[in-house]
Length: 440
Image (cartoon, rainbow, N blue to C red; front, side, top):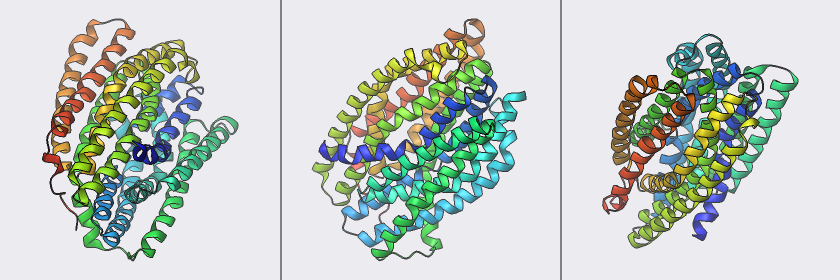
């Protein structure tokens, strides 16, 4: 448990960077107008979906570096990290161009209309300029996590969050730039963090014998190895996007309330994910060294830690939801709908804590194909259930509170609960502890 805490606490500090950006954006923009908050919900969903799909840059790098280090192949592990940095720049540049050009149709696809759509497009086109910097953060964090040296990521994350908050206040409140100022503040903070982590990561790798120059075949191999993990994340993001589309169809106030819950959930979720990533690095290293009994013991400890953290975080989440939604919007209806969503989700967080811990362990073991298959299957079921609710139950309900409650129950029980079942079935077996998919 001590090793998990030693890695988990600094990792949490690093993980909260992007959710903290969105949480601060939500609190500040929410006091501009309800339309601006709804636009932020759509725009941040586009950005978080696109960037979130690239989380394999962090997870696959962590798993690969940890296993190679556990096997005593230090130089190969560092070189794998450098290849991931190059891949992050390539993907980040392509994403920036695509999202800037496609901002309006993408936000419209999520259900944006009129002023909501206009605000969303402004936000996307401002914040997307920082995407390459954020992907550099992902890849560099993968190197430091695999090395089990995460204090530097904590320092950079905290500094970046403070910078983003200060710039948010300056651009949105002092200068009156609205939702665009919020996006521009995040863009600057993202590049600051990316460079602050990439430079020491490359320096560390060079000292360990790695080559800084791009090795195109190796870069392609990193992308290929991470493809199943990309599919797993894509499936999860489809589920999240479907939830946003459902909220948008229910009206501006429901969408604004959803943004408050979602931004807070993303923030709280990283407490749970930090435990998962600590387990990911530690279990990956034990598997790389061939110490199966130690890997199983760490697995059990990580799962218990995830459950306990979920209980604590869930209780705090529900409590905050019942007393503090007014911090995000002066609109009383938005406050009420946010409270409903936060209380329901807070009750479900213990299960999610266990689920994310199991998810991290399977990623650390390189069990990407299983995760891709099961996450896709669960998401298909969830989208079907959500479509049924939107076509059947939702039109029959006139009370927005009941609609909101039904939406969050579906999210927590079907999407998150389904993933918990799938991960639980796998983690009880020994199949995931076999030979990693790739350690060359």
